[in-house]
Structures are given as C-alpha cells and as structure tokens.
Image (cartoon, rainbow, N blue to C red; front, side):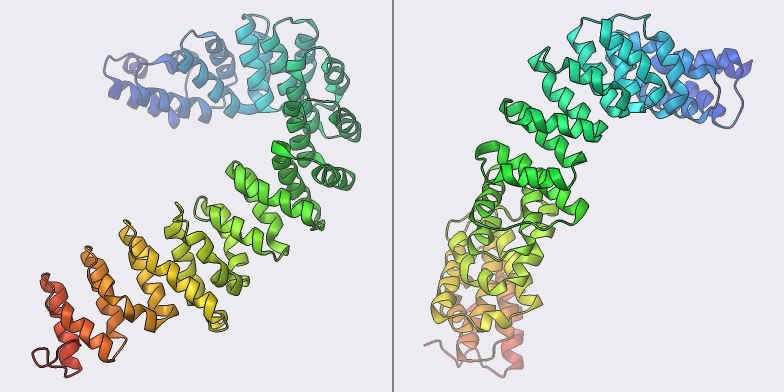
Length: 458
C-alpha cells in the first residue's frame, strides 16, 4: 500500500502529509497500527497530525493500541497518550481498565488519573478495588482524586474510612468528598473542620464553597467572624461562591470589613477577586482606599472595582491623594482611573472642598517630577481638568518636560485656554528647539493674532 510506505518515509513532511491523508480516508488495520506507533515520532508536526487522525477516527481498536504508551519511559510520549485518551473519553475506558493491572504502580497512577479526568462511572468499581489493595501512596492518592472527579457517591464510605489512616491523604479526601457533594458528604466535612490543621481546613473551606448549601453558607460566615490569618482568604472565596450561587445577602460589620480588607491586601488574585465582588454592596472609605492600592494589577479585578469607584466618585476624588503621594507601583493606572471618572461625570468634583481640591492638585504636581513620562502626561492633563489656575502656575515645569509628546500634549491643552498666561507659555514654546513644537505654538498664536516679537512674558 503506497500510503503505508509514505508513513515510513525518512522525510517528516512526507510522513505528516501521509498521516493527514487519513483524515478523510479509511484506515485498514495495518495503517491503524502504524499511525498509533507514530505517537512516538520525533517530529512534533507529525505527532500533531497523528493526534488529529486518532481523535477523528471511530475505529474501536485505537484506544487499545494507544493505551500501552502510558508505560513509555519518554514523558512526552506518555503525556501525549494520556491527552489522546482523555479526549477520546468514555470509549477509552474499557481499554484503560484492561491495562490497569499490566503496568507498574506509576502506570496505575497515570491510568487512574486519566480515568478520573474522563469521569466514566464504569471505572468506579475497579478504582475502588485498587484503593483497597494497593500500598503505594501515590496510587492511593490517585484513586481518591479519581473517585472525586467521577463524583462516585458509592465510594463515599471507602473515602471516609481512609480519612484517619494518613495525614497526607486528608486534603485530597476532603476535596474528593466535596466533589461528591451529597448531604452525608457535607455533614462529614463540617464535622471534621474544628479539629484539623490549617492545610486541611483550607481544603474543607474550598470544598464547601463548591458544594455548600444555605446551612453551609451560614457556617462559613460564622467561621469568618472568628478567624484570622490565611484562612480568611478561602472563607471569603467560598462565601462569595455561595452568595453568587444562591443570591444570599452578606452582613457587613467591622469584622467582615476587616476580613475583606485583609484579603484585598495580602493574597493571590483569585481571592482578591472574590473579596472585590463582596464589597459591591458596601460604602466605606477604608475599603475604597484598600481597593485603590491594588487597582491595575488584574484586569478582571479592575472591572469589578471600577463601578464601585465611579459610584463613589466624590470619595475617590477626595481620598486618592493619600495613595498618589506614596508614589505606588500602580500610579499610572490610578491616574487613568481618575481621567475616566472625570470623563464619565465631573459633577462630584465641583462639590469638593477647597482643601480636598488643593490636596488633589498637590498630588498631581508631585507626579510631574516622576520619571515615568506617562505619569507626567496624565498628571498634567488632570491638573488642567481639576484646576486651570494651578495648572498655569506649573506650566513652566510642564514646558521643561524632556518628552516631545508630552510637550505636544501641553500645547493641545494650552490651545483650549485663551488668556494671557496661556499666550505667554505658547510664546516660550514657539522657541522650542523641536520644529514640530515651535511651529504648532506659532500657528496657535497666529490664529489669536498674538505677535511673538512684540509680546514679552512678564
């Protein structure tokens, strides 16, 4: 058969083309065997094409031919075989189970991992049998995890019986039982919470957030109000999950506020996102400032926080100077946030006290000394928007900006202000060494009929 010979070509391009021929043509048994063997091909392009052909074929022998490669000493081959079998889904189950007792413990663990990801309940009885007789800890953990992924409720008693046999198994058992999620499973998880170490409590809290009900929601709330440290983070996350699932109300008091702020301030993004979600119903200066400190670090988090900032724009305008004056890493994002808030609605800005407005302007003038050109440009734009008088006082500093585009932006801002101070600044900029800038300044002055040679800055 010509195609069979091409599959054995020394040229990887020819081999790949020969494999792809069978995307639209039937394979006989000899071709099936050859293409399955090519899962070990040294060329990545060939292996990719082999994967496509194997997954597009409905031939029943293919899972059986692929499964032995889970014993390959080449990790890339083993992983590719696992990926193909997982994508084949339940039609690979019987072949995987048939091979389960042929390999060593590493193979057993790998096969059980694959079966768990496939999620076929037909694998439960044999995984349980391995769990009951195998002594290898990695295999036992794979069984526990696999039974959880399959959501095997019939395995619940076995999983519970393993709970006190090995401390290392507890977090995995909790996660597996949580995925099963029956009432009996929930009751068991809650009963173990008080006396466990922090790592296991982490697993318990996360599992309850996935499968909990109203009773669990109030249990987690009660725990949050008496918990400190890192356990606050998964509590916030699980409470958010159940609130979203059941539309529960979140009580807001000083302890809840402190828990949210601790989560916003100290943890991974996933927990910060959940904390940000919970603040949407609350109005609080301290929480707003805590949110400003992390704004700009995570686009998803920012999208949750933005509406809160805009709803409380007066609070934003009056308090953000505290953060800006610390020259935080997210200063560019904060200045952009202010510009966006002003573009949406500047009415709250008009109600600021003189002191708040002065504090805000002072923070912008400090920003104009920043090494980042975008910080300087944004601060300049905001100063013109918030206090034209203050902006014109500092226009000399702005004209000395070493960034050409910032000076050009200054000319655009001055073009919108037709008064003596603006004209004097434009006269100075008409002598800028950069031709693009001096010509633009001269054009604006000409439109205003201001004679450069006859006008001197005072």
